[in-house]
Amino acid sequence: QVELVESGGGLVQPGGSLRLSCAASGSLVGINDMAWYRQAPEKQRDFVARITHSGNTNYADSVKGRLTISRDNAEHTVSLRMNSLKPEDTAVYYCNANIRSTGFSYRNYWGQGTQVTVSS
Image 1 (cartoon, rainbow, N blue to C red):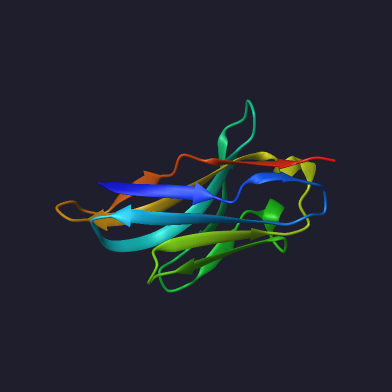
Image 2: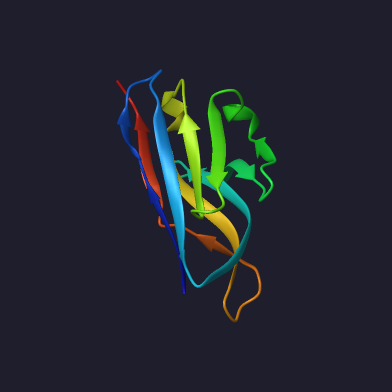
């Protein structure tokens, strides 16, 4: 059983900052890529940022320079530091990870999502 749990969402004013975190738990054997996606109301879920096990990153163009993804391999966590937030960043943010667990090959897992609202 593998679980991803996000935390850190909330309400912030435009120009403000938030930090999201996601922790993987369960019978973990290995974790490859970890990523963040987001879904605004009535829109599809979109890619935000990804980080490999070795720390290589890539970002959606809309967030480059404002959002920073990082991970702690020892703690099985991934974080998203969000600066200079805009109203269009408002969405439910989902953690995604490619995980191998005991008795299973690598597969993708999703967290339950955390709401980020950017509004004055």
